[in-house]
Amino acid sequence: MKKWQILLGALCISVSSLTAFAADEPAKVEPAAAIVLTDPTVNVKNLDDFYILKGSAYDKVTGLLQNLPSQTTGLVGSYYFRVDKNVVGDYFYHVKAYDTVSHVLIGNYFVAKDESCAWKLQAGDDAALIYGNAEKLMDKVEVVVYPKKIPLGSYGIIRVHVPGMVPYDVKATSLNTKVADITEKMNIHPMQAGKTDLVIDIKIGDTVRTVTKSITIVDEADRHTSEPSHSGPSVGVGIGIGWGGGWHHHGGGIGIGVGPWW
Image (cartoon, rainbow, N blue to C red; front, side):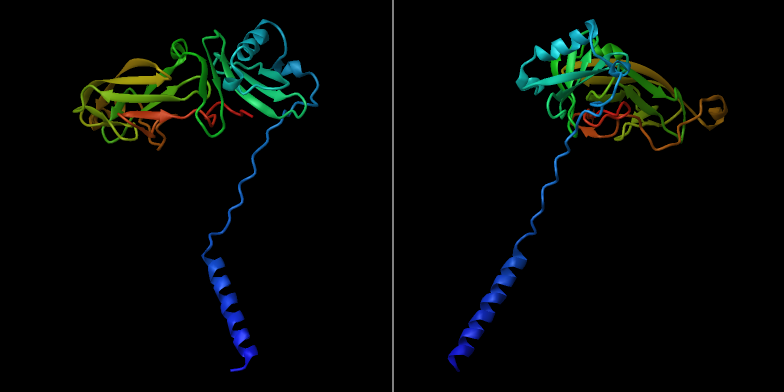
């Protein structure tokens, strides 16, 4: 065999090996570009139509945040605040902080009117308690069971209303499972006609509140005297995601029912 034929064969083998090696390498995935949120009101006039810009409420909520460690709030450098006029759930001031030069959002918070707690809102994650506790917040939590009369063959639902985008856990127990039980998805499942009480625990941070709700299960003959049953698939805000030990968790980073946030 001639020398040039040997060299050509070796070159073909090398190219084939490199091609096969490249095919075995996983495709590189480009990282998603980070979303940069900026102040949409930079060029808006009459800002006091939308925001609290001064006064005792402004000084109270912004002062609380400024007095917390920067490692907790993320507030560093030069920045300014925007405090929404609308009070969330009649309890929280919604406060945003922007970089003075770039107008990029650097902080997003809820501060309680009574200054008992403050939360840092985080896109994609649970809101984080950065000051105080949830004891007074618990007074604002509402638990609704619907309907109070549940026909056999239907089901009831549990709704928990917490002001703002604040994470909580919930656990429900029937005191008479022969009359009604609680399903894995936190629906109220009627078993037979009768009455029972539900014990519902709500946990926010380290604070737990327990409420009881009475329900009645009615049979088909009583359907015409009962409240309309709920026929849709929804089981209420914050219910339906398993959380160890019978608790179900509602995360606080996506702003369900309150937004927009950014």
